[in-house]
Image (spheres, helix red, strand yellow):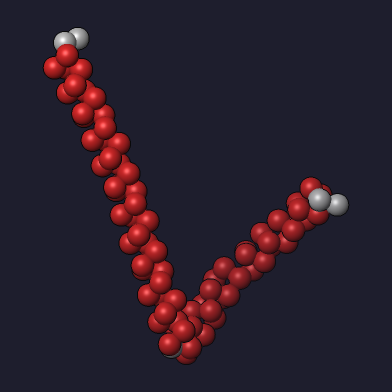
Length: 80
């Protein structure tokens, strides 16, 4: 491999790492900002917060409780 090809591949590899890191960080930042605004609106509108809470309990409340119960049992076996 010539020096020119070696420099080219090194540049491409470093650019790929940089672009991948940029995409990851951009996705993390946008997700964090979205969650920030969701929680802000839930604080400002407690009636909407109550509706969301009720719907979550209706649809996944029983499943979540059984999962949490099994998780606590597992922890009790790990740390008696």
